[in-house]
Length: 295
Image (cartoon, rainbow, N blue to C red):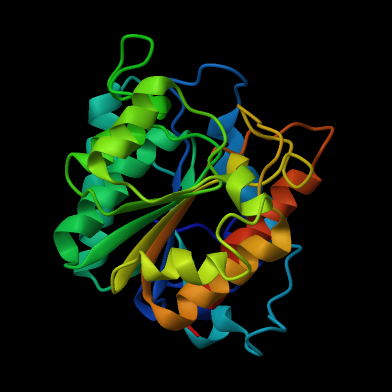
């Protein structure tokens, strides 16, 4: 049985009856991985601060009219330890942990940490589920083949994902280099650029157009810099002109209704003491996606 966190440290601060491993459908994995960040630092502190802030998130969700934490149970595992590990070893540790949880029929939520870690759960999910799409909400394409002499950089994570699953749909992108643009064109990756959404290029039903690109099963990788910095400024590489809260939740709610959301990660929160609201917003986002996934 894996080691779990107590009520004082777990997600939402819920008691053992609803957070024990055997009683919980949903499992929170904290992956405080930070080895390749290139601008603002601090993502290793993200999972802990999300868990801490989650104690102030309401159990009841007014949209879905339920307290899903009590209906399905949410277990929070002790954080993974990556000390003295190379990046490839750290990713393998996350992959094996996720694979075991999927074998136990758990819905896995991974908290980061830098975005490079998302390759690991995506690999496990791609092996476990057929007909799987990867929905990437992000400011950056993350499709570089290599960055700062590393193929496992946070700037390369989706290039590595594409090597095992090319069913990638990107939403909110507003920063990329030419090689990434060429990769997207060559591989015909659907991209909903933030500026094009704002310019109404996709029309009022842009969310339905995102939905139409997704296969039956969907894994969501959510880099918080996909949101506008006015929503979550505490992130390593903020980009102006991002997605706003309500339109993002509307998209996630629609996908939860129409598709089978099988798991997700939330990454790249870089907490700063002067803006604790970012931590709370990230925690609220995690709980909203959980609620939407089980509508």
